[in-house]
Length: 234
Image (tube, rainbow, N blue to C red):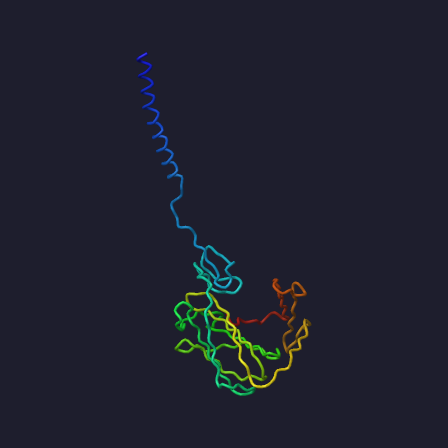
């Protein structure tokens, strides 16, 4: 009877010992079988198209913009547009000045990333839709942009500005100004027939054929001949 009790006591002492050995062996095996600790691949994202991701540095396949590891919060940057002279007239020189401000500090922004080789792109659209232009204001030492113009029609002009403040994300801000005189109502007619120039024919196809507001529409351009094209604006 005494012997049985001794065996039980020994067993009780051995079992925990073997449990410890087994746990140590499992831990050692897991450490040996686990690959060396390596940093997780970084997530590179396009600042303009946040749905585009990559596990290595590069450029966005959609817009060519440099991918970044961390995309800052999409905060709108205020922009102020000044015009000179005060009363704008068709056919007369016009000077527009743009200033971008940091929304958190209220201070002017004077450092911009290049987008398609330029710091700011401005689009001019007249109220009657007869005038459209893509222009490139010049960046000044104080961080402002100056744009000299001479516009053909009176009435309202819509001015979207595309820019990329350093440390933020690409911005699109729209402003409005007026020229003296009246503007006739726009008359728009669809024109999807091939457009011919001296040495090139361009065609446009829409998918879907009838665009729907709020839904994606794809534009397919066909050039003939397609040879001889050069890089333009990046």
